[in-house]
Length: 457
Image (tube, helix red, strand yellow):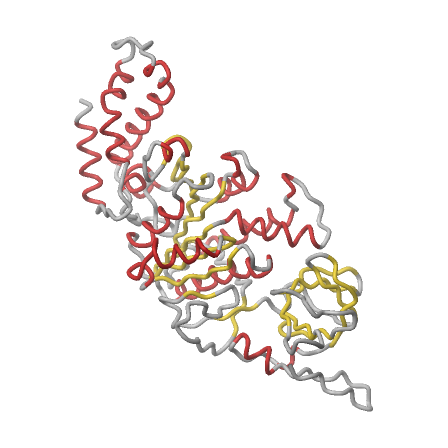
């Protein structure tokens, strides 16, 4: 990387030659942002401490390690008096005391292009799919302003997902935010792929945050496939990425969705997973000295997640919508996990996935108990609401008495509703089970739901 220009005799701050840093992100930056040059004081854990430079939280900087011929990009994550805390986007090999630091941008930025559809990019907007570069005319601010609450349109229309259990019992609305809550290995990724392929949306934006590199490759090439990728934009940051890049990946996905919404598009946003975003913010918060609270999560985690979620939803009268599914990992299948709690409190409903059902090869492993759509009753006919409640009641009643039924302790005729639940249990299971390559229209789903109700008479 070119060195800093020598300081002039008048003592003016030297100008930083940012040609290589610009090329790495593929768009031009405002030179007026280069106001100060500082130096690295020390490295502590994940953070680089710099002095002699002033920059706001979220500003992007470049560290010149004076070796290896490369620059290291970093973001300002905190400060203490005249000490600036930076978190690098990559490994900091070669950084030493006195390494130069320069402001690249005073805002958290990423890349956006209208040619992103069908591409896989990282948290900075750089393509990682081997399909060639993308031309970015200007950076985009990842801290976008939210649509004011009273300017948002109401959710009045159902968005059909092609998944029977969701469309029938937890009807999803255009502009709704829904959580997919489950432990590991119960079919979240497969369900996400079904939603990607089947949901009626103009474009799908998928954020794969904190996943294993192998899982990212499998999701793109196998689970999603070429057909699913054609109308999707994928932002991927694996678990090995810097925590600040994982956060930027989540924010970039929301920014991309907002750009398409502003064009009047109906966007489907899938984030896998919200828990990994929380983990990344936890790493950042603890690294700069935030006090740990619930399960070690610092307060900044509980500020970040609602801010992200509130960027999603209906736009104003001239815009489209962003409908979203967020996967939430219930660690050790603990449904009282703090991230699960704040997700349920902020989202417009949740789909609970059950390990018990997954172990019984019941896919998708949607548990009717604990799942809810907070807008369903406003966007479906009263007859569907009645039928969905009836199915959920039978499901819940059977589960509450399953042990008695299995050991033969229940005497038929003791409870007529339970008798109906026992008789219909195989047909309810058949209705809820769906192969990952099956697609059911909304009309077919309603027909099957009505047929199931009629068989209970």
